[in-house]
Image (cartoon, rainbow, N blue to C red):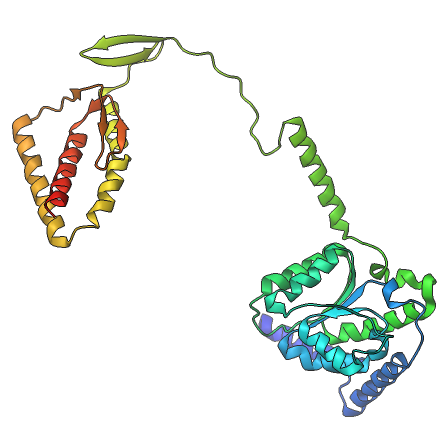
Length: 358
């Protein structure tokens, strides 16, 4: 028997032996009657021992496909919801005002936020930050993509940080209505049933986070940040001997071998390839058509071949101590001019000639 078949058999046996699952129509009908009876009991008229202004706001939010369910929820539990200062996004607040009216002095409306994709969820999160939000009834659509998903995640994350009541679906919201009604009836002795409507709470993880922040701040004040590397002892300066040879200045440190000439040439070529002259030439080449660029490159290749014939196999560098200018007046300091730099200068002159001719 495969693993998948084994799981299917176990699931089928669980369904057969379960006594709580309404497998027949009569059982499902009986469960529906019990739910209706409990709903009628919790939605009966009552007097709250707390005024709406004594508690923090209760937010009602629903995504587009969940708005019909939110409207039905508001109609069913209006007797409880009207005891709070209700806040929410624009559409949800319009539902409440159309059902309850706007002129009833017993009803205290909270902040009317804008639509969710336009910042409504962020406004509700801001209420949490200013300690004026006690709970959120948020009917989330789990089967649709939302353009403001970042705002939704931020709202739910901050709700967890503040440890406030969150009901993300109709089942949890309906169960919460029983708790809210009981707390409103009992008064001060039942504040602990809905503490987020009276006090500022926080997640257990917040305490550890604040401790880490305090440690980091203390390290910064002391000057030894944990993220910064440990300071190393400065090495004593090395003595340098200078000698002048054929107009060039060479520096050799005591106790170390002199640099190899080939490595110096490789480094010099690498420096040339990284200069602003190369980048200027690359940008300038985009200003010419393909025909002109090919002609320019052909002229440059002829110049290089002539240089090769004249110089032969000699690769000596011409010493100089001047500061040379690049293609567009960009100054590049150097102590030598290598063959690569001479070639770039010729290429720059060719480009200038074409610009002047045009």
